[in-house]
Image 1: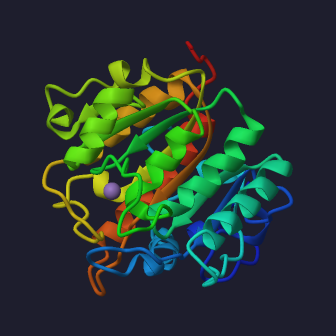
Image 2 (image 1 turned 45 degrees about the vertical axis):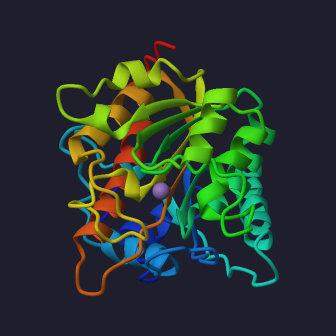
Length: 302
Ligand SMILES: [Mn+2]
């Protein structure tokens, strides 16, 4: 299938692919832009994340040398972005739930672009209804296990507390910001397996040990602040430390090689105008996820 022929879809379509590769009726991957920002607590701007990622994705090389493939050939459709409701903090989570459920009903692989992390509660609820045996792999600087933050149970800072209330196995990677209350809750209930940021350094990082904590079916949630802020300073709450580019890829390769990943989201990019490297990293990361999903070989060991 040629990627240099045919009409191209509008500008804000992941990869700026020709129409036949970006058709929601046939594309295996459906990208859902959700530019919601309601409970942001430090630096704002994550509502501009999806647009920045889609703009940067125009520059991503469609051939992946590691995989010796053009992953776009599975079809990548970018759905119209959700217009976040301002009714209350719950409404955008419900909108995300509905949109993801619709993608799953059509049998597509959903990738949600945020926006703030709170929307993952809607995404994961839809995923869990479809896949009751789901495990969650979270890459993040923050445990996000607060019962509420600034009196808001639907805060980005308490999203994983909502997730563990759904009784879903959770593995958290890159964590280096956790409050005393969260730590007390974690010690008492052990609601997740945590791989601390300090253990994500080269030489200590062990992707196989992380993936071993997960069941056979996994949803991947990436808060971009899980990565080193020297790579991605464009985020609301940058924390020193975190995963490097190749640590992330080593983890994702091991994950996709041994588990069935059934969806993903990427949250909390807050673009810095004129500084495109973080936007491009996110676009490249999404394209790597698609490549690993469909071109890594079909010999799962789990
Ligand atoms: Mn975070």
